[in-house]
Image (cartoon, rainbow, N blue to C red):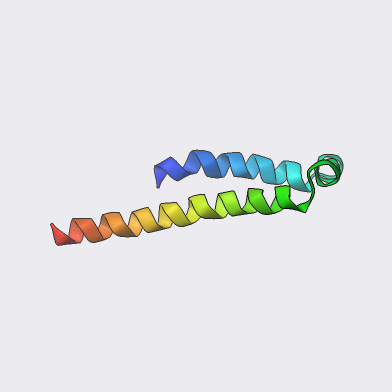
Length: 64
């Protein structure tokens, strides 16, 4: 779970940029909606990967 902290912190910074009044509007004009979708999808995948890894690790510890 500790490994996911750094990418999620980067996403938090990206989230601030995406929703900041000046920067977010400029990003939307330059990059389009797909940039926003990809940003949220990347953070979601990191979060899902951390949760799945946590469950697999606990399951592995219970088997031993």
